[in-house]
Image (cartoon, rainbow, N blue to C red; front, top):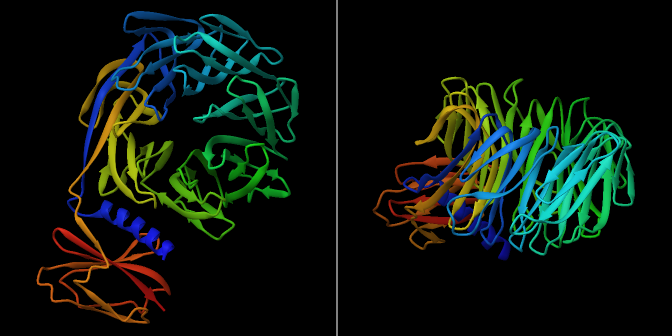
Length: 541
């Protein structure tokens, strides 16, 4: 009964999302743009549960900010900006740079009002109150913790003799820190030396709040194995998403790519670094995972792009429409069991950029080359290219979409949730552009932008579970199900499977429905009148 009530409540929520007249008041506001004499590139955007937000991006040559001008120290420098809870605008916090190009990969607001940063630099990184030095190949990974005024609290430099980069940074409410990335040859983390088994291995490390190293892990066997993102699971565990193109070992399990193209992996580690489980997804041609997130119960959501087939060991599989890359979204349980997967196809290429879960909805940003249909809306870019922000339910069904466009190109690079039902989006654009009806100032080079997206739900109907107005029999049934009622108001009937998918719709106040062609299992019958829904569980033998 508990399981039934849970599933029924879940389906009720999802059915609400599909109700005609159930609308979303969408509004873009609090637009800010930042630019200068060179190009800006997106870095990261993140808000904590308290409502404090941080964003970071890189710039070239000169950057004009309110009240100050920043000059690059060589190649691309980065800037970190902050927005406190209740504020509507970002303000300057700190600037870092060196003689070559720096990358700012992740920023996370700290509990003390400061910020945690991670990225890579060449040779040296000059911060407001210190300079970090790289050795070996001249490139190093940095993790820095700053106070609320931007002053450095502590810094960690991760050197190595080959390729190296960071992919994600996780900071939970207790101050625990995890860092993921990849490296070749060797990697030096404090006193530990990691040696790559393949061309590149993934690495994962955990730090205490003060930056002290707790443990390191790395995985790889042959070819390239790289982590692209990490997310928190219940019990201070984490899950990682990544790809491999030859083979990788997780504990006693060896994953081998189905072809020489990329397959994806999911793996989870406990608070002490112990491997909890691992999962493979792949098939023919390329699978490129991009981003991952989790909900409070540990359900996992991840997106990416596929050309060909994506297949899990459970038998669940999806495939692209043709030889072009399509967008995919998938979900697993907290133990790695695949739950569902969806592919969203258009005329040419559809890509995922960022993924966010907020208030029981999934937000996904990306871009399309060519025509792309989403939730009944047609994205048909005049120049062949458009970005978008899509809203999806937790079973992977599109709800709504916002088209984001600029005649010189617009690319999303940050997605976060802050209090007040605000979704924040960041990215870069060139030329004349718009976020739906909100115009972006024209620019000759790529400028950085951030804006808030409000989603307010209106038009919710009255929902009745097991409404006595209608009598359904027999149930369980092997064939026809009779619907008995004295209801005079016209109604429609929808048949929904246990995964929330609509299988059939009957109009004209039907008195029965034929289930003989449906597979055995649990279904839901929704009877829709003008202002009322009645929902019933049905068992097919």
